[in-house]
Length: 62
Image (tube, rainbow, N blue to C red; front, side, top):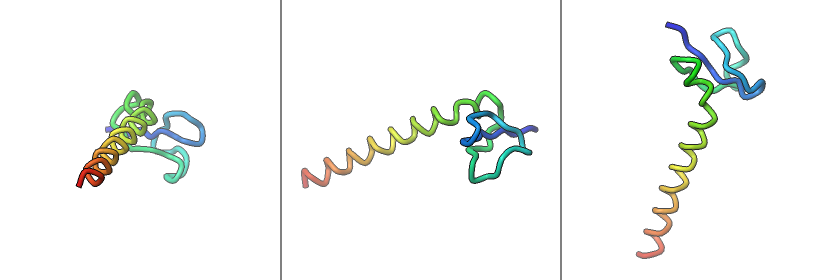
């Protein structure tokens, strides 16, 4: 089973022999998943920020 990473330095999908771990996101099970790494990061950040706003609103109502 191959694994893939998204390189933040080169903005490209890499295999196991790519850049250093500090410059990569992953591993992912497919090249397609790795190519969407930045989209996933953005989606997760938005979800996290949204949950933080809900908490802040709840605190303000208390």
